[in-house]
Length: 401
Image (cartoon, rainbow, N blue to C red; front, side, top):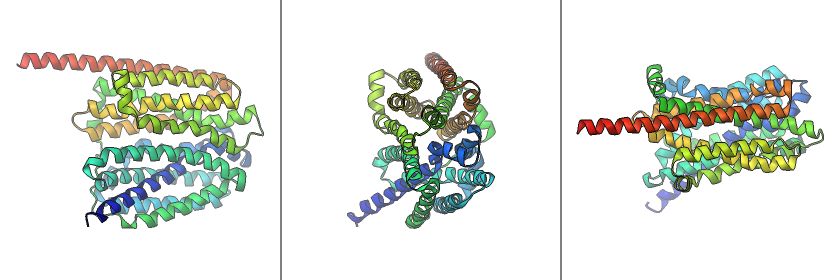
C-alpha cells in the first residue's frame, strides 16, 4: 500500500496537469490565427480579437460570480462538467460558419474555464502530499505557461497544415478525454475557495498597499494581452505571406515564464526584495517593447524573450507578494488579484487596438510603454506604502511595549 499510494498521487497530478495544459490551449488557440478569422469572415481587426477577449472576460469576474456555485457543489462535479461543456463547445466551434454564433460559443467557453482552473488548483492542494504542495503548485503554473504556448503554436501549425478548424476539433476530443480521465478524482475534495464579498473587497482596496499592487498588475497584463493580441496583424502587415506556423512560433519566448517561475527565490535573493524584482522586470518589459519596433520578424522573435521575461518577473513576484502582505483573508486578497489581472488582460486585448487601427504599430507600442510607465509609478507607490505601513507598525509596537 505504501508503494502504490505515491503512484496514485502522481497519476492524479499528471491528469490534472494534462487538463490544465489543454484548458490553456483552448483559451489562447484563437490568438495567433485572428488574421485568418479576419479574412474568412471579412472582419476588422477589432472584431477578430473578440475571439480571445470573450474567452478571457469571465476570468476577471470569476471570484465574484462563481462563489455560490463553488461553495455548494463538489469539486469533481464542477471540473468534470465544465471540461465536458468546454469540449462539446470546442467541437461545435470547429463546425460553425456563422461569426456571431462563433462569438457566442467562445463566450460560453470562457464561462467554463474559471470553474475548471479553480477546481484543478484545489485538487492539487487536496491530492499532493503536504510537503510537496509548493512544488506541485509550481508545476501547475508551469503547465499553464506551457499550455499558453502550445495553444498558440499548435494552432498556427495545424492551421497551415489542415485549416483552422482542425485544431479546435482536436482540442474538443482531448477535453472529452480529460473528462474521462478525471472520473477517478476523489469525490470529497475540499474546495478551498474564498468568495469575496463587496464589503471585504472594499476593505482590502482601501489599504494603499493592495490598491497600488492591484493597479500595477492590471497595467502589466493590459500591456501583455495588448501586444500579443495584435502582433499577428502586424506580422501580416510586414509580410502578407507570413504563415500561421511562423506566427505561432513567434510566441516561443512565452516559455521564459517557466524559467522565471522556477527561480523566484533566487531572484529575490539577487535583487533584495519582491518589489525590486518586479521593478526590474518592468524596465525589461520596456526594452522588450522597443524591440518590437524593428520591422523584422527575427528581431521581434528575440524581443519576445525579453518582453515575456519582464512580464513574468513582475507577475510571478507580485502574485506571491500578495500573500506576504495579506496576513489575514489571503483568499480575498488573491481573488481580487486574479480579477484585476484578467480584467487588465480583457481590456488590454481590445482597447489598444483603437490606437493600432488609427495610428499604426509604432504609436501603438508607445502607448503600451506609457502604460508600463504607469505600472512603474504604481509599483513605486506600493514600495512607499509598504515602508510607511512597516514604520507605523513598528511605532505602534514600541508604544504598546
